[in-house]
Image (cartoon, rainbow, N blue to C red):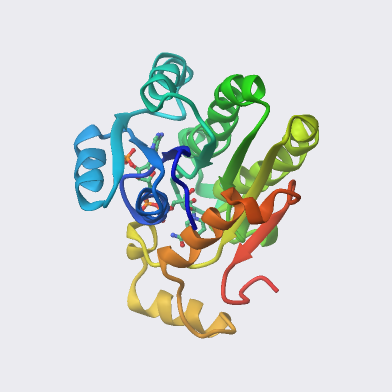
Length: 243
Ligand code: NDP
């Protein structure tokens, strides 16, 4: 796919799925902003990428950070065609053990962050009457998962938000879609022990965890001219886990 002339912002682009999405866009010719809370980590990720990848510090869960940094990122890119709301965290516990801050941190980063960045992205996108917003949710937002009540709520919220915003901006040629990964090999899933991973793999019809590139390729498809008539959709990338 050819993304020359495209300006892309990937939140949480400094590792894992976000890094792979950013790297795929950069090597397809896009000008890519790689944003995370830790600027050093974003710089290191950009250094690993081929093409025009630029590091930025951005905390998506903070209204002040989005207010102060988003416009500067768009100015640096000289526009914004694609926003990938990928930044996400987990604070896994059974609901009975969840502390208020475990709930609030996860909702603030995953759900409010998606809202704040999407709203900020709409300014340039509405002006140019085009744009692609791609939200990274999770199969857990479709199925729920014991021990992830806060995370599942944030990811289900992203799905409702995606479908609502898709309808609001469809007439301006802006599409809004979500990708729901299953179990993907990253630092986030690296915390699981071998026994937990084996139990999960038994539930996956394809019998293996996914690779970050398998998510990235779907993001590029949703941003490409092949997907002009797809909006409000949730695409599972899960090896059949949530069929
Ligand atoms: P990682 O933990 O490997 O990476 C998370 C990224 O998000 C990092 O770049 C991190 O950078 C950034 N980040 C975290 N909080 C913030 C914040 N407040 N503001 C800006 N950036 C932030 O996660 P994954 O790559 O595994 O996951 C990426 C997305 O995919 C998440 O939304 C996750 O929920 C979702 N997902 C992952 C699955 C998996 O199996 N791995 C399955 C389903 C969904 P920094 O710390 O520097 O801010």
